[in-house]
Length: 293
Image (cartoon, rainbow, N blue to C red; front, side, top):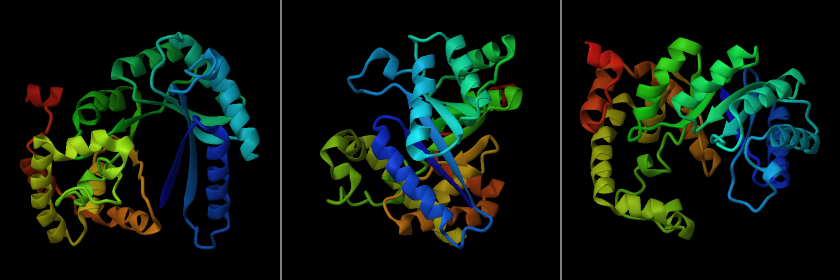
């Protein structure tokens, strides 16, 4: 079992307390044989009033932000540190040199990008090769049944050329793919919250209603495979060869257990099943390989 905890340094002290709790809980679990915990920290641009050197991807913020968080958590290193969103105010060479520094200092094992374009990732790779630095190893990208373009068209070329894997997030599209919005917006759901008005508008829109209709059809495939719709959706993400891992966001242990059940569904994702899913969705993007053939 692979568990990834990804952290954004927007409220470092509160986040560090939660991660330390999760880390200790994991280490004290007698049933954790064969499992491991990956700690990933994300540094980048946030909408908070801060000094210029306390945000973005400057060398100062990357080094001090990660070092400060490690001290608060009483840890020596994290497995992956992410550059969350590109920073146009910081030269690419400075970003790559800073990431190389924290890795060489033993504060992180690897670094990756999040919400970067393929061109920006390639630039970071080129800078790393030019100056004998360490390039990024993965990109965090949104990927689910209704969002496919970047992971299926843009990232595969990077995956095959320079080995950058995709660490995808939102496999259930903010809960839309769970089917809980089939009959409206439940009071306890995320879409009912004031801060998620954009999600509510998306669900009740014409495109949102079409998505719900497609989910009903996909539910028949899930029943055929003996799984739930969320498990089918997560397994569908995992079946992509360029996807290194899928980030899961759950509200309770039951949801986490259900989503992890997608691992058992993965062997059932045959080419015939994937083709049936593509037929229902009708949104399979065309890659360069498709155009050649």
